[in-house]
Image (cartoon, rainbow, N blue to C red; front, side, top):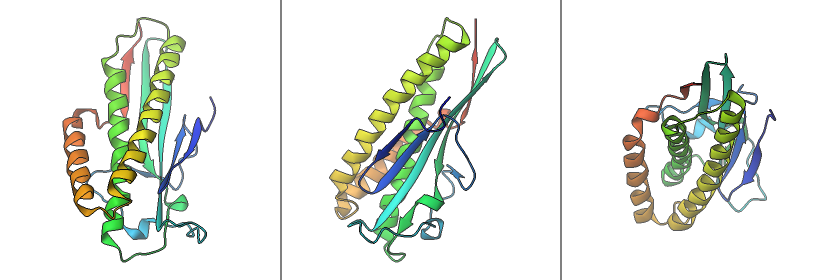
Length: 188
């Protein structure tokens, strides 16, 4: 499988989606541990009009013995690719954090979809079906992230930012049962 499925550039963040790429220097999603400006290690892009860039990666990997498919859908933050021009703006940090939470929300949606699908074929066909789900999920995530940036004006619209934070936290809570990145699917 390819190491990177697609690369999408978005206004304040970059999403790298991979099928099981290099995981060094990545931080797994942990809803109990929020990002801080110290997590942003990359050199800022001085030519960019943006004040920060958050890079996340959704990794997708699988193993099978022919009877059981073990699938991992993991959401990561990439410190070495994420940057900020300021470490004093709490509103901007809250905005950037939510990009990571939104990526986790879509990882949970994908896990839920996979677990609720009744697969009736061999491992390769199941992987093909899951790959299609993954690609659709990525497209939906990209649209959602753009909508978030547009509606919050990249953290400037404070009321909208707070509304988005409440919405995403609620949706994450609703999908808490899908927070485990490791899935097991019986192959019949």
